[in-house]
Length: 206
Image (cartoon, rainbow, N blue to C red):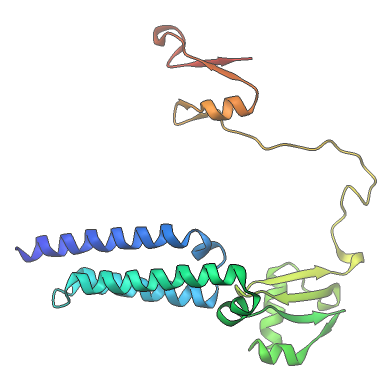
């Protein structure tokens, strides 16, 4: 087999393996990335890259390693859904860094956070004065959740005692020139096919 063709096949197999693993693990890998997810993602990517370009390594070795990592990650995810203990073991626990407006320095040390780190994250959330914050929690994905003091939180329609109607979701009825029949039906409309020479590929009415 020509070396270039072998590398091409290895690249295709690496892509397929990564796609299957991504589908297996779901969008959590990017939406709620924990330290454990980060390590798994880096490892799987490294194995796939090695499998694609290292012709001294049998391609099946790389596929086996990726399969094992994907299986155990999926199994751990299922276990963590059913066990609080497993979630704390693999994903950690949130840390309360500010409670009642006071910085909890012991929790900062446990979270390996400094005061400067805390102030930076507060500024990223839009709070430049720490006195405006009632509670701050460092989540397991590394993001900081902030609860401002009552006098500093944004005004809501409930505060103003306004009775506004509920607003539903907006749906696109045409995408890339194609009529979305399901979206039309969700809006209470019925799609009707029409002659192309008159109104185009389709139209809709009440």
